[in-house]
Length: 218
Ligand SMILES: [Zn+2]
Ligand SMILES: [Zn+2]
Image 1: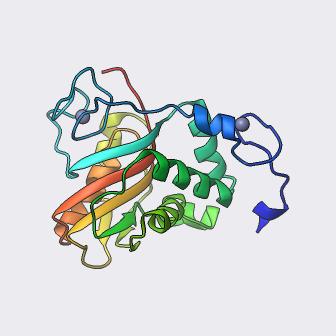
Image 2 (image 1 turned 45 degrees about the horizontal axis):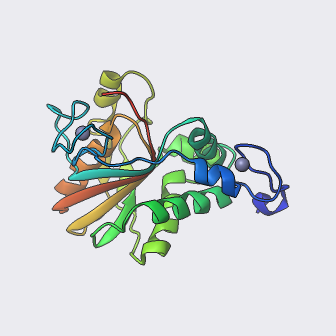
């Protein structure tokens, strides 16, 4: 509701008119192929596993993101997560639907927010993105996961991996082919932990779809 009452300004460049102006939307960094077949990292030539994901246990079949996580993408994600600008989740979903083909799955689900954050924000940003995407792709969106303990930890890769292991529980059986939606892909640890749980709940393959992806040099 608040959204409708606020003056409409681009959250990236502050131009009037829309929460994400056409220019800034077009400028969101593209993730151009070739990509790592598994984790979706841009690579020099096509590979099955790249230096970023090789040697790690990854429970999802593939991960794809619409934009690189630069300052503008960060601005959009933070505005929709922390400031609750709902319209931006719809804008982000439109960018994803524009840049990524629909996943070949039975349904979409999303990474659940931990309870504290959901209560603080009054919404789960990943769920909002998933529901908007479900609309674009004409797929059902099913809540399948919940957090077992603690929140998503920020920080070093190893700590993140340790902290998310066993962090999720399935609340119902998963469709065989499922796409897991989240706002940002960083190390893939969260997506992998959630995918492990989905597979234990009956998923044969999990595709990860995110709005943005951290781009490291690999
Ligand atoms: Zn702008
Ligand atoms: Zn990779």
